[in-house]
Image 1 (cartoon, protein in one colour):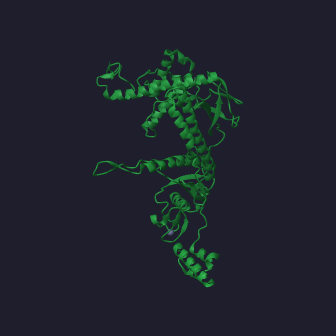
Image 2 (cartoon, rainbow, N blue to C red):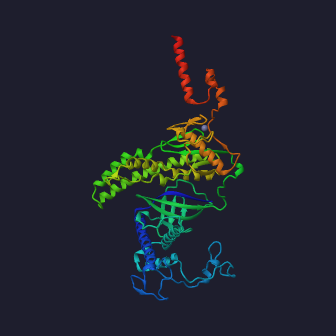
Image 3 (cartoon, rainbow, N blue to C red):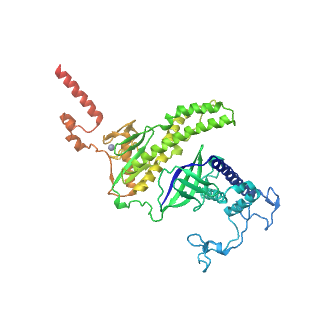
Length: 503
Ligand SMILES: [Zn+2]
């Protein structure tokens, strides 16, 4: 099993300066390589008779770019049989004796984009003496991540890689290069540093990649740990699933369950809205680029961090609670991006001017949607559920607040704000609880397990309603159908009658 722990790091002031310098150096290498990738790509379309537009190299088979996504660095590599992938053990050590494995692919002298840039980083370090200070592993790891970012982009999983800012750079060390002793940690070239050991690391845990990141002014270290003897969390098999609940997310109530339990929205960003506004105003009065401006910027960033941390704390706790409520948790698959989309502009056909389209009101709603952060709540619930072996599923949310879970009748008239009254079978309930029940039922249908029990509040059905003591008072009520509007009317009538009697 693998886990990541994040600790606060306490470098000395000299180490802290060096870390900032490292970040800056990694950033410049990464951005040069990213620019190279972009340029090479464009050159491949418009180069015409040139191989490289800048150097105006003429296209010949010898100088023509080998790789269409990288032009800096060495394109060809020499064959070094012992270092080939097939000739390495499981531990990565080179096998010095014995034949190479059959699965070993034939040697390809062409370098991949990552390998070209990796060789470029070696040259870069040699020509720039101030790079001596930086560990070459760290540069390689950064380039490896950039290569991964490109692969993710081309396979449609991510957006195009962006040019980085110094503060966004994480310093990643390769597995086996970092040592931990008590509350001290040793990095190559940087030496020992103290860290806040907020959680215990078992003796058997093997330290994998270690990453140092900057959060405003504070340094943090993420340690990836692995223990092969501990198995991963395994989800429950279908036979073990007994209960299912539906979770309806919203603005006023961040979560409403089919069990009739509701969680109010803590409105975290609203609580700190005033503080944020004041500090942003202070920042706006400072001269851009000045030291005071930078200081004020950090103060604003800290408010944002405070909001983020409060929200995360709330969501982790709530996620854990939701995850342990039932064996299966059914969420609605909301299109949050679509919900936050801008209103269409309204054009007046006569004057050609733009009319009001209610975007102002919508932007407030968008703010509330962003603050609620339903997606990250779902992700955290998934994480916690995985630990317990429980399932988290997503179902189609269409019409979930208008459908009656008793009879399946769908109508927008069923719902009146927070009340839900079915027009068909007169079933009435809190609208959010009712939506949770619908989601739970949809989840049950999606999974196709008949033995699943939907955890819902005890519903008053017609047969039960006749037994309830309240309704026994009036014989007319028993004979009436369960339409609550009518019941109200009759009760009023009875009251009038009583009053009339006493007179
Ligand atoms: Zn109904």
